Image (cartoon, rainbow, N blue to C red):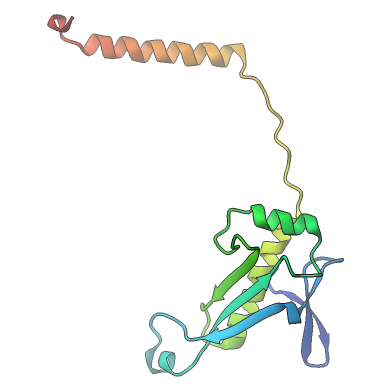
Length: 152
């Protein structure tokens, strides 16, 4: 999935998350680092991997409800302080890794835009309770039948 950008000339100035949420690129910090793994001679010379850092708490573009949902996520990319850290090193070029990191940031924030469904608590039916008790007694009888007669 490609990230949607607002272009002014050749400069990318905002990252479009939804119709009403646009993150200024000045709030997103990206640094180029050397990639890990195999890559031949090029891997030791070129910093093609991208580390993306985005502080959700300092962002003026995100609504408070989205910030709180991002903090509640059990995602290793979101720190306790609300900083999103994404490392992209799948591609050989720095630009493609930059695009991939921005796409992953967009998807992460979009996932926190959706209101989670509220769970409706239900009671187990009589039949399901009876089945559970029958299974327990059946299992107990099976274990009793394995005992040798002198174990009493």
